[in-house]
Image (cartoon, rainbow, N blue to C red; front, side, top):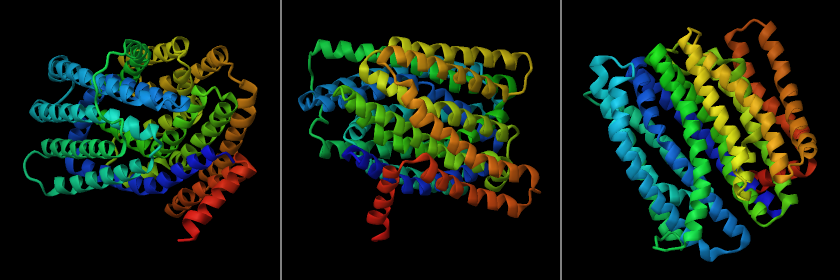
Length: 507
């Protein structure tokens, strides 16, 4: 196998086993926080924190564009340009941070006080949560350029260490919350800010020590700044509309259904993030290689990375999604003491969307970013985000149940997948037949063989506690076997077996 494939496997598996610990700790932390704060305060924290997260539409574009420019120059072997790119990114983050603070302390604060459905007696605590979430967001803005450097250099193990620290720190925060006096919602906001601050300081110190280009310099490279701005413009609009679709719908749910439904939405996001964290580790490992191949005009390796990346990204989601889909209510009741209404159906719909849609098209956008041909592809995302928000508002306004918001998202993104195939074909001569044969057919065959047997058992065998535990334990094992012998090729299995022998069995 090519050396970059071995590097991807090493980076992914190194993070993968750490992530299992992180996921378990994170989910246990959510349980403690929900019990300590209560459903109403947890819902307030979710919707108010979501308001701050909406400002991520300014952060995300600079992250993606910075990483793209760094990887492209690395792919070309032009390492002298890295410090200019880093400095441009840092400057843009400072400007974006000032803009976020201005908007947050005016429009954002007004919206919370006048439009969100929050009990009057909890409004002061909501303001407190909002301010510390905004301060935390400002702090993380300063770390983004340093994070992009780490990803571009494929120093993925550092994410494992930071992820473990963050999970453990938040678990400690949850236990301190139990014994803390005063308003626990306010205390929780302060503790979260402290965790963000520590992580940002670490990223800064690490990059200053490890990477020579992690130093700010003033420059007047107008061509670079214009090219940066052009890319950021497209990604900025897509990111803003994505935030509107995700967090805007949370606001819609709050306006029509109140903080209890927001608590269900927040718990759904916790499950979603836990499952996707495994895929995200893999994505961080493969995106730099994909971008460098595109920049070096190595199309054969690029398409090979795309189909392999798509398959394994899909498989990593599938392993953990099948038991959750089959035994959603059982797992939620086992995990939480009080499960808010609609949480189960929210979780199922979100996981189905990521399995059938986002697991397939994630890497498309990375190729488009690397080529610089942005307009047509991002226009599809623009239209989808607007349609989802508009139709979500309509169905809530006319009285449909809140889960229809997720049904709309699933349907619209499913249609967008077909459109993106056409756009990719026109933009970069996307090999549709190759991708279908090498990626999609194995993916859906694995899905069918993994899911159908356990679905039948779950449907027709009495749902006892023992049956539920058996399904939860055995379905991931069965899915793993199916992936190894149906979803993977012989050389890919050899890479995995050799890695396990060298890194695990010899210890």
